[in-house]
Image 1: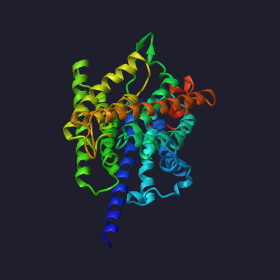
Image 2 (image 1 turned 30 degrees about the horizontal axis):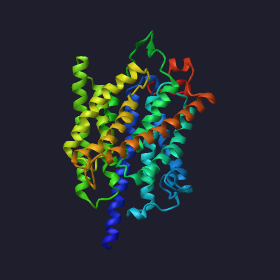
Image 3 (image 1 turned 180 degrees about the horizontal axis):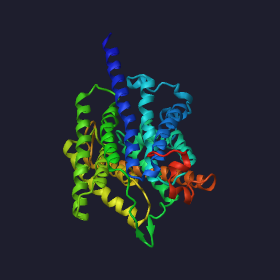
Image 4 (image 1 turned 90 degrees about the horizontal axis):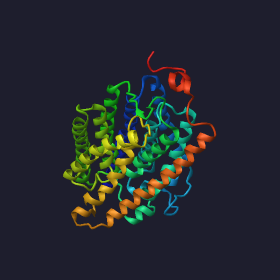
Length: 407
């Protein structure tokens, strides 16, 4: 075996193993969403997360992969059915390895939407919009950055997907939850009625699984082991931001509510992970801690804003974690970037990168929100988006699936 074969083999192994870690994040999302919602909807929650990956896998293979990575133009990749065009060799890995790695990312974007719309969405409608996200919405905006599109040409930097994956899913979740409306009993006579989830154990286990999976999500995005120092730095920055996010949320909730809250702190960890994802390759460990601390504070106030001010019912805090902190983390690259070929404002890079980052998050936001409004209103006016009052009161498990999670 020559050196080229050995290098290709090692890089392929790295991409496939980290891709498997990202796939494991589906289990984390499923457990977080199930734990943070009521037991009568657990089968429905788990089923949706299962089908996200099943539909996303086939849909991205057939159409999404080509739209995202095909040559095309700055806005849209070529239609390349069944992933037959090789986009991996130029990266030093087989095309099928690159396809698998990108498939697990595509499925993550769709899964984010599930949590914000939990406990009152029709299963049939969910399957349809999950497919549309994986086949069309996510690949088109993904092409702009990772497929060599117009944002990439501007110098927009989103290494592992704070905007490409998380904010796209978060913006769609926000629109979906707004169009769908709050759960029954959530807001009564102008007052907020807390609807606690049924298992903090499942929620905590889900966050630990997501934390582990993020070590595939971020370091795996190198697509190579040729720069071990970069890979190691990404591990450290990813972990540091997550830990800092948890600490910040712990302190904020303790101060504001009189007692430290586990549920919110779990989301603080996720907020740190989402925020660091864009710049994990270029920020220092110290910068990662600062970003994580700010994300942990931001998620608390974002949850309060959506819940109390605009009254958008998001059972798991998906919008606050993925949308708000996806945007925040991407913009922070413009300040904290230091290395891997780019520099932010705090390290002598000027404002050009910061401006580019802002343009990128605004463009992707406009795309996701616009698509979400069309998609969700179309479903609402045709087959319907929400289950009946009786079904929601008694739980989706029995009415939608005829089987309960807990017998």
